[in-house]
Length: 183
Image 1: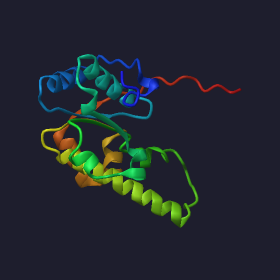
Image 2: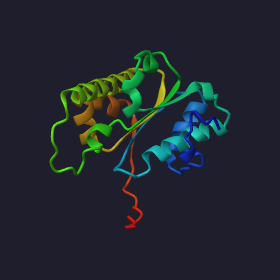
Image 3: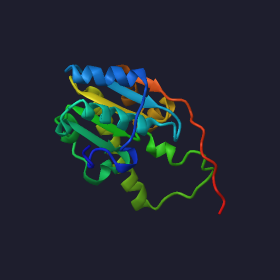
Image 4: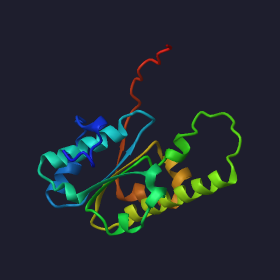
């Protein structure tokens, strides 16, 4: 398994979801397929996506044709061509990171203007990447987000609607969380 594509944490990722079976089968047959994983924090969205990529690789799909990106890292060196003219299969994780990271926070002070500007640039890159991903004809992808409402809030209703219109949506249920240890 290419270490640069599958992080060590997901090196043994497996899934039995029929949607992933269909997605992988379509790609291996030379067709296009798109999956949008929706689910709450820690529901297994990223795990399931890496399990799908692992399955493609195990079936002999060329690693050079796969790309995995975390939305929260896109602002560093985002290039629209990364999505538009890039690899045949793309995984874009954490599309709703912006709202997920503040979920449950009751009240907080506004960030400094420089931080707000950086966050706006970051979010602009994520929105642009998601819109380009939805519009790529003949491409296959998996994207992850927490739910439809946060997808619309973070990406805008138009971009969220485009993603939802072109993808098979898999809604993952919450998983039991391990107890928080109090040392």
